[in-house]
Length: 94
Image (tube, rainbow, N blue to C red; front, side, top):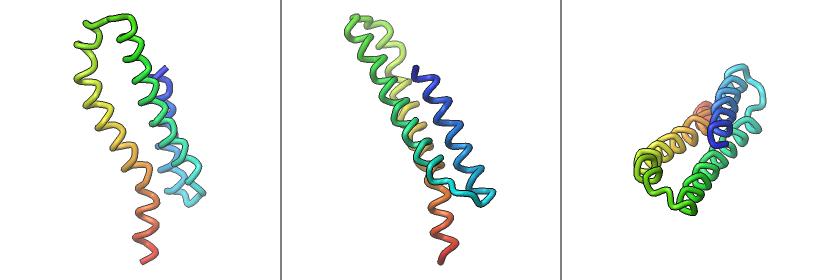
């Protein structure tokens, strides 16, 4: 599930940038990109929770350290990329 939500988040982010580039209303796409990013993180956390309930310690040891770093980096990138149009609009108004 996290993979599907992640793909949707990436698509919404590109839609956000595309709509901004052609001068259309982009804020709904921005909200979708950020929302699906949050849903991706929650789905990933749920997967880890299921591993804990199943006491699958090897899965936790193998995946979680790298996954935590990747989630931080990708979430921060999503926030930065999705808010770029607003920052550019603010800059252009000055």
